Length: 334
Image (cartoon, rainbow, N blue to C red; front, side, top):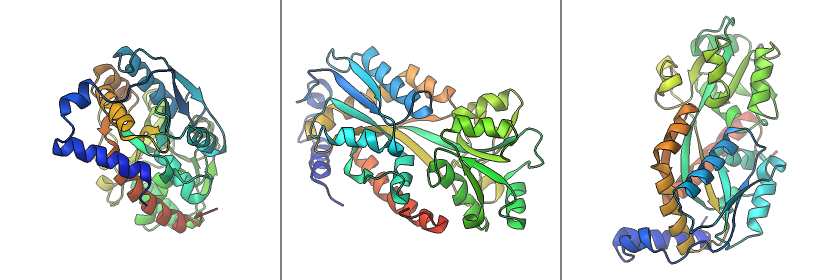
């Protein structure tokens, strides 16, 4: 797919790479700057990691005075799996004063039909956080490792209740389904219990209503520290740091699979090359700020920066991979 806004933005980035746009000009005096209030559309309810990171980005942009003296107003636009936020962004086509949250879960939601929108129409300007999906059980569970989980599910694919959020086919579902499929488990027969949020799914695990939960790091690490939960696998490509330093990856446990989610920032469709240029420069500075990095690492995730061109390549690749996995789960286009 080759959208006009993507072509324009890539042309701008090509100019940066070849020197036809002077780097000093790009960094110090962009051709576009915000001249009015900036709205940051957040497609989830307050309190989760997507909301946490969006507000952290907002705070850092303002702290570093990167928005030409303007105010950034976060607006939680909740509903339809994030589609309402995308619809609101689409209504602002070409308006660089609107940002929105990007998350890998939106790709999974779109290919399964949960989100009635083609997320490929919405250009990410950057990826800011690499999120680790974890498999957790209660501290008193007989499951001690990924191998135990695989053995139990091979013996009886329906024998364990596995909690995910916020719906079937979203990223936490994909993050456990992918390695289990590689391990030889019949993933289309699993007993999957969807919850509205990972907070609710973890509460269900603590209460004994489910046996296993797949969730991102921030919602489980505190309960692990309190001795209530045990982490048995990480879907990251390599072992993490801090609270995740002792958590073995699926690959370390003999399952050649990983699943990484990304959190970032979208611009409106038909954003101009100058708008992409401004926001990419500003967000790169956010990504390098020690307070932002520390906040992300405290949550158990990794602060990164990937610009627009690399983010668009990821979007295309992940769309294909998520479509294939959704088909395996019997969820494609539902």
